[in-house]
Amino acid sequence: MLNQEQFDKNIKKALLNKSQDIVPSDNMFENIKSEIKSNRSDKYMSREKFLPFSLNIKKTVIAASCGFLILAGSVVASPNLRASALQSIGKYVDGYTDVKDYNKAPSKADLQKDLGYIVKIPDSLSGGYMLVEAGVDGHIDGATPDKQYDNRGAYATYTINNDRKTTLTLGAAKRSVEADAPIFKNAVPVKIGSITGYFTQYKVHEAPEGTKFSAKEKQDIKDGKEVLIGIGSKNKNVKLKEKFSQECALKWKDNGINYQLTSMGNLSESQMSELAQYVISSK
Image (cartoon, rainbow, N blue to C red; front, top):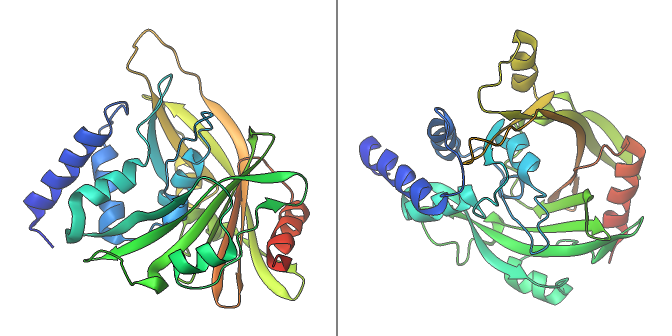
C-alpha cells in the first residue's frame, strides 16, 4: 500500500480523469476512499454501467452497497466511476476490474472458461425478462486477477422490452463480500424451494445538492432502510427535484455460489422468489 498522501493523490487523480461529468460534493472523495480502503463493496453492487439505450440502471444498486452516491443530473455520467478509480490506483489497493464483457448471452462453456467455475446466468427470466448485458469481474488483491478464479464473479442485467423501470440485475460469485451491505440489515428469510434466501425492501431517495435531512432520514440511511443518491447538474439554472421510489433485493446461496437479484421496481417477495427459482432451476 502506498503512503496515505500518495493514496489520496491517486484517488483524486482518478476522479478528475474519469469523472468529468460528475458533480463532486464535500464528502464524495472521502466516501470513495473509505469504501476502497474498507473493501466492503461487491462489484455487482458497484458498477455504474450505462447501456447504449441510456438505461441508468445501476445507480441505486451502487448506493445500496456503500450507502451514498453522487450523480450528475441532466448529463450522462462517466461509466464505471468507482471501477475506473480503482483501476487507476492499480495494484496498491483492493478493488474490482472488468475481465470480460459479453454483447449477448454467454454460453455455459464461455462463462466457465472466463469465470473459472460454474454459475447460472440464464439468457432470460420468467415474466418476459430478457438479458441485455452480462460479464465477468475480477477482484484485485495486489495483483492482476489472471488466475484468481475464486475472486471472480459474473453479473447480468435483464429488462422487459428495454424498459428501465423493469430492470433486474443478477450477480453470482463464490466470493461473498456484500453481506454487510446496509440494505440487508433488514432482510427477512424466505424459502425458495429447499433453499433459504433473504429478501429486503428499501426506499431510494434522489436528493439534490443542499437537501436537508431529518434525524430519522439519517438514521434510516444508516440502518439500510433508505438509500441516498445525491444528484447535481453543471447547469446551475436546472432545478432538480427530490424523487422517492421503492426497490428490493433477494440473495441466496446455491451449490457454493452466492447469488443476488436486485430490482429497480418494487417487486413483491413472491415475485422475486419466483425469479430466483427460475435462476436456480435453469440449466
